[in-house]
Amino acid sequence: MAKSSSRSKRWLYVPLFVLYVGAIIYLCFGNFNDLSGKVPLTILGIQTDRIVHFAMFFPYIFLAQAAFAGKNPWKTLVWVTISAIAMAYALELLQGVVTTTRTTDPWDLSINLSAVTTATLIMAIATSRRGR
Image (cartoon, rainbow, N blue to C red; front, side, top):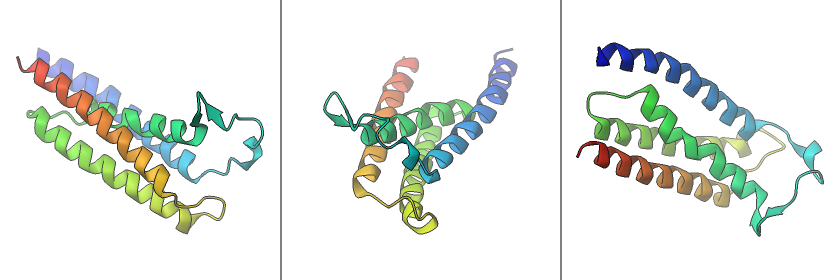
């Protein structure tokens, strides 16, 4: 019974994950110059752009782990983390190549990776607690 419940949840998370990845791609390559002056440059002293990058990549680990859960959650977490790191690098590097309105920014990449790292640590703690 638990297996069919897990399988039915996966069919919910896979499309959600695909939509989420599509939203990240849109946000990374979209032209948002018309928002200039309408969005504050900082929130609580942190650049808004940095907050957005963290918020974009933080859910990746949780959604991918749910969508692609296997028998071994640790193995899944490793592969999900590798895919998140690859996506963070690829999207940031491609911004400077594919678009004329966006640039590759090493600070954005570092924020993307810090979001992935934070989410991975939280997921690892949750996974280890489930195993008890």
